[in-house]
Image (cartoon, rainbow, N blue to C red; front, side, top):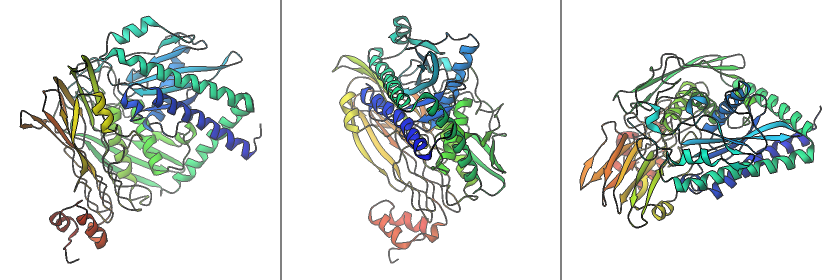
Length: 563
């Protein structure tokens, strides 16, 4: 079928709009601030045949692009093999098993078939970060976990909704294994409602243009996405490019984990080889294959943002399976840090490998941590338990276009930190400080952006704090002569005494009482280019605004007040 360009473009925009509306509905209806305020979620449309990505919401987390594609394909395969019950109209599967195409257990996926004339036309899927799925610590970020069972409840694909009605037995199993279970029904209904809306909007699009026309458009868009990505790859000179990135530790063994990457550009393909990376680790910084693949995809999207969000854009990207490394975790390896932390270090390795080849596109390393901080306890004022999950931003790396953004969202998504007013309203805490992490941007011709500096106090009741962060040992890498950004810093003040986690930014189950405080300073981005070449007026302005002290500016940029 031949499609005119206008019809093709309108259908492409229509598919995107379906996903955008699902995203918006999910956030507006969700109960948890991490979804309702931080937008830690994503929605997409996937192929009926192989689960490949058709479209995803523009404001969904990029790391979920490859993950939901992978998990939808696994679901289709399990149905074909008889391992999972076959679908019917109105069914919704729930799954969070990381080894079946997931991330960590808190990222819970819903998958729904869309029927047309009795046949599955496509699948709709979304992912939302639940504040808790059980496990040894509130929030699921168990820094010292040595098996996935310690991280929470693991769900294979099962039907939570059957023909539109929620299965109360499945729901009760879930509720019996997670904290603050009475609050999860709001998120569950929001997640399901987003799929309801998506099916209705997609049906309207299909009714308007016809199923065959939309199918033809989807196939054409996938082919064009592959063609466009191949053309973009031509910007990279043929050859091999290498880099190394480090994870501070796995939370159990206090030694760094190494990501070794070789990127090969040959013809119109990019091949990514992580051979030589560290072996599987004891702690929760293992990455499952789906997350590793998705991390490569999102890194390339950062380099080529004009490439469409489509399975076709992934076709010229070949990732050699990193067997025998911590980037290809299998059961029962713990994985709570894979999507939030390890994925960002994978992206950092991609940037570092290609920055000399395409300096106009690649940047110095960004902060590279989601700043995962979970606080769980009992509020005597409300008489209820709670689990607060806080994510934070950091500095972006400098680039050929200028200085890095200060306090930007993480590499893996567009999730934003929840407003402090919302957190203070929902939980027994008070923010004592919320400012830029001054001086944290790496020096360069174009400096890195600054991280965040915040301090939160527990107001009442007892609580337990847990952290799974990174870049506490090594700051984000500078590029082309630029210096590394400042490291992540975590201090817990208990009874007036400072406690610093042995693993720097990973710890769990820290007892807190009223008046105790958590002080976090997130990393700044790496600098880009020789610091000595930075414009003197730009350095003076940074000093005037207090971003660097005069002494630091002199040391980093060879700057004097007389300049």
